[in-house]
Image (cartoon, rainbow, N blue to C red; front, side):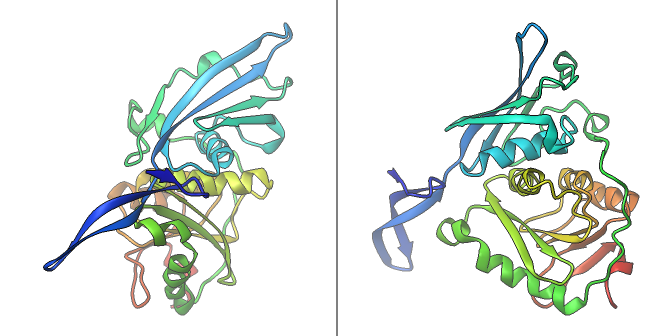
Length: 277
């Protein structure tokens, strides 16, 4: 088994059975590896205060964006200016905050363990994950044509480079209100894909994404809507189904939420006023 040059897939010989035909062929698998995210601040000593924040199972690639997106959507950091530097190794990403930061690391007593299937495992209660958005409150005052919305799944499939090889990755993509593709991130974990995407815009200092649309390749869970809220996103579309809590949070934060989206149909669960019906 060997890693390809993109470091996101593994090539492995497998036995493929189709009807009566049995053959040995090369197949590509999406890599799932642990990433430890940690945080440090220099104090006046200058002693380094260090805190391990999270271990997540992810697809390697965009680890810096993943770490910063995670810290941002968890409400631990709020601006790019807080970050002094980010060091990465194959399985660790360490974020250093500026010495002027007053964040009390000892108060971060929640220990996160997130798997690729569930981003909220290990959190004690729903109250613990209702993070407070620190971005300016915006209305997301725009409308999108139905035909434009139905065109997004095709674009998503075209842009999912790693998925084409493995069939085993989730994706999160951002479009602008004109319907143009902006950016996409892939990962074995749907929550990681979205953190990578938000981290990308965090690094560019382009949050909030209040004039953009988010498309998720799978279902819309409560946590993904919560991350969208943190990034100032007002329009979320999912290829799969939304959960009841996702719909509840979307309505609470006046987010347009679409589920079961494909090239011919979709369901609107909240915020229909942003669609030109």
